[in-house]
Length: 297
Ligand code: SF4
Image (cartoon, rainbow, N blue to C red; front, side, top):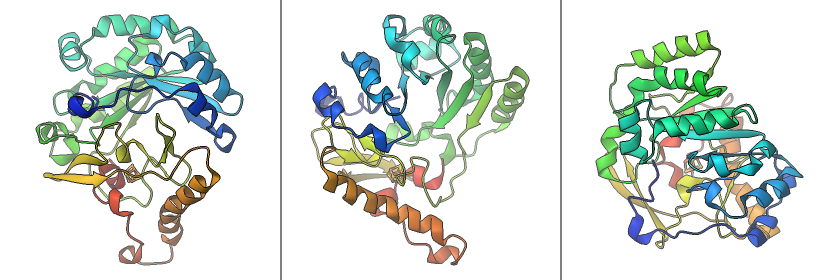
């Protein structure tokens, strides 16, 4: 579920500290999603961080749910996303090393206090369970399910788990859609066919990621907390190494200006859509050309 296990030997285990957090200009944004590569509820300052960000914008986070029963500030959030790996107890334990039943109980205990979304990653071995994930959402009081793809592939061994790279039976997805409608659960399923998009879902025109050490970067796909300055990425069968992308310190106004130039590449692609031939659309930034998010999945 997270590349930390793949890059264990060079992973930098670190929390963002409060001093760095306070430098983030929350008033520039509508939402602060308190998450990077890692588990936000492990940050000892998470409660204070929520309070700081809430003064300026809406605040949410994605968690693996293990510490939900100790998370006192859950009611202060505007939304909570809980990641769920499988609808099957044994498979869930295998993928996530924790009990699905216990996780369900923990979600149930908070779903009356905050709107909950379940995030489910569709792997080759689990995507058939999407209809049951929708049922679980109803049972635990979650309002929404988001079915994501394995859109960052850190090693060749995992490539076979990406359903958008192969032809799969799409019936479980259509069954899940019907079920969601019937049960009143909102269901968003990411496309499982690739097609280049003008602006990726991470949308660098409006969004950015601030790393644990206060660097501005467009998204998690261009930053991994590893010792190397390069990221290993598997794209259409090829193992690539791409340079990490940073625009400078979050407290420096010049860094924001330079970041906005990156967003402008996407803005221009979007604005020209109606005026030029598809072949004349300006190309994606170099590090995005081999990112699956640029192909809509
Ligand atoms: S295309 Fe990929 S790498 Fe580029 S900004 Fe979007 S998510 Fe990040």
